[in-house]
Length: 253
Length: 187
Image 1 (spheres, rainbow over the protein chains, first blue to last red):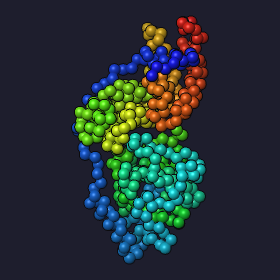
Image 2: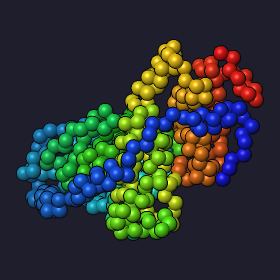
Image 3: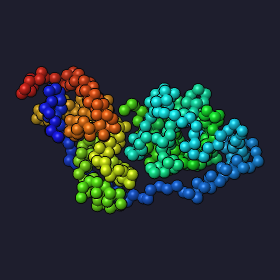
Image 4: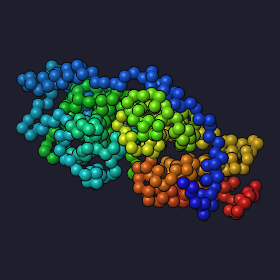
């Protein structure tokens, strides 16, 4: 398609500039890519046995007679508090008012993007990676202490029951609790503090039905940007999760 | 074999098909990354990462869609949060432009100065200017890359040019010359 000659002098200058712009020579990118793909390890997969063991251990904590919990350590990233407890003592027990969830797709507070943005007070963040993410299957809002947490859940293509990626955002003045028996790994995201959690764990947050305890089995990356705390849940490894987190886009499109 | 056929072959794991698929696009991808990052090494890395990402996501790509807007979107997003290389390049370019060394031909000088001015705009402005003028994408294709409506591309471009105009007039004297048909500079 041949563009019509621009009437604006600045546009004319831009077109002339584009014609003579001194690009460096294009390197042999396809060759390099082919080499990297040949050398790349197999995609990271969950270590199924260890995950199942983690689930078994965590579930056994629920099944054991109540024993007093002992906090060994706690870590804080923005609104998220990670409480490290001894595995021989109790984790919080479900009560008649606690809802136990096993999938992010079960989160209450399903809503629209516009409604979620209205409650959050800003545009929902989006991730540039993975590039084919598309729209989330679920947008959920939980409100605790008057500060909402908005969770976006993406599912695997063709598998509406299989969670692919979760992105949650909450004002850093909020409070989300995680109970684990192993400490997370401190890392950096965009040169800021972050926490990488690989152990399946319980997370307690507040929803319209009261406290919702969810058992999180995917890897979790927690970091903070400009007063908001972000969490992603993913099956990806640490390096890929960092890339996903660093692809966070906060401005309106 | 057309692009849709190559996509299907590549989705089946044919490495040669994937190579044939990306080769026609590598220059454009690299050049957009270079425009956004201002550094050849960083642009090459971003381009490689773009194709790696595309390879991994290809099984889920709709072969009926054109590949180019998708690849351009990936590289645009990859370059979005990278600032440091662009700042180094800008600083180096300023030193070169105003160092008093032998001046490049006026068109080339103009081109580099415009690029320096564009690099000072917000990233969304840079993207729409580079896509419409430097990559010569149509409004519809630019809209597909940026995942916005065609009308939004036009309004965004209009605002971007409005923000570029005073930068050009105030800071870059070679570009502030009163426009005439022969565009002869006064210095």
